[in-house]
Length: 255
Ligand SMILES: [Zn+2]
Image (tube, rainbow, N blue to C red):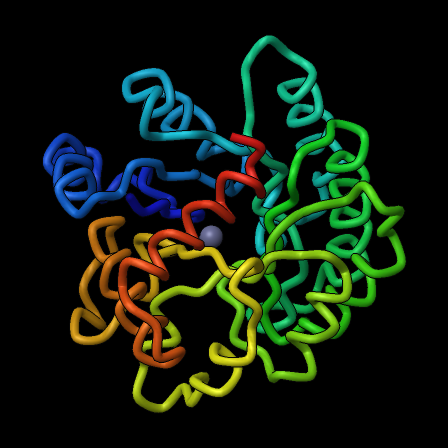
């Protein structure tokens, strides 16, 4: 059994073929797919998948940093109301800081991130952190808000060993995805350094398909490709990696 801890499989590009995409994931032994929200426009499609495949597709709610704009407070109010509604969400995400695409709303990104980190504490839910060109700021913010009850994952982690140490010191999990399979990424030493009990697997579908599928649309069925690479770097068997990453995901998401 394997778990994809981060996949935007509700994306429009998959809508037509979603039955076969999810069957391919099941055939690849992926038994759960955690879906991070993006902004208010992605919610309906995500809810639809969660309602249609409730054993497989598990929704989370948050505002992605790339979509923090002038109106972010209104979106956050809507999302908090959803968290407080009858519907079950398995995490607060996708939240964080992105300094790569656009710095216009950097201050607002930080404010939105802090608000949503605090939801994680209030709602006792893990937070799913996106950070691009912002890892040190993200770790500093989590570290300063960690009160002993905050849990979560740094998704698509591709930092240095030193940054990994700091993320681990926050008590957080590190999500490993397709990037670790890229030939130029040179992440083997960092992957090998991580303790077994802090690693989870993810695709970030439809982005960042692993080698040798790079350039195609990423799907949850590629989780075994990522597990193989983790096993190779760490000199462990595939089954051992599958075992502890699944156990870790179940602890992270309180399954
Ligand atoms: Zn994502």
